[in-house]
Amino acid sequence: MVALAWYLVPGGAAVSLFPLRFVLPCVSCVVVLAAGLAAWAVATGSSDAQAGSMHNCPPASKWSIAVWEGANGTTASDALAVCGTDAVAAAYSLDSATGAWSRWFAGKPDVSNLPPLNDMQGVLALGGATAPAPTPTPSTSVTPVVTATPTPTATAEGPELGTYTGTTSQGKPIEFDVVEGSYAVGNRAIGRIKFEYEGACGTACTCEGDVETVYSIAPLAIVDGAFSKSFQEYDISGEFGSTTTASGDLEYHHDGTGPSDPDCNSGPVTWEASHG
Image (cartoon, rainbow, N blue to C red):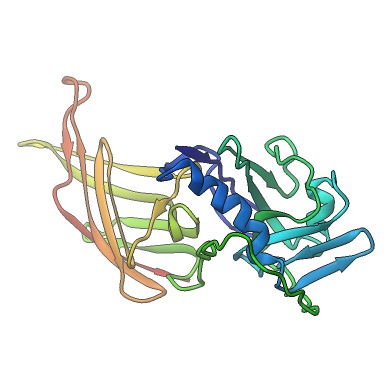
């Protein structure tokens, strides 16, 4: 079992700093992936510089397996800078011996631990939000030693990024933010939810308030155009009818502790929201 650490990088690509775990079926799979990083990408395009070349630089906001061709011991910052200014937002490298991942984030030396790169070493790189397209160069024919399946890359499909605002069936405001997801949670995610509510706390008692939840560490994934989450005090679900509109249901429920903190339940509430 290995851990991937993600970070919110400039340009809106949201990745988590906290571990997200997945299971490799065998130790040999780690070796296959590490060896394949170099073997798969050598024959692709590169960006050149006097000190060396970085093959297969990632497109804007997308992933690629990039390979450094240059001096051993080149720092990750210097090697990735060959792709262009702000062209790479994050990079990861897998140690085939230990199965551990190291990481690099643009402008974040305090959370970066990717060791210096050696000649023909491959990394999993994420393009910056405005990364320039790599300049094609003549490819070199090689005979791969190990065949690796390229890592899937994110697409631009999904609801538009930004804040969606709307109204609940109680006439109360609701808003949420759609942010870029990550390789772990998907291409789009919910980064924040805020809404107001009113409810009953007894036969002759009413209650009201507002709730705001921010998912700065682990955004709420949007899967097949929908999302849902149950919290201690509310449940919410939503579905995108288009790239700019969404609707759904929510219910607020607070279990009080006594007369000074009564129960409060909104009952089922519907909502609609749109972008822009």
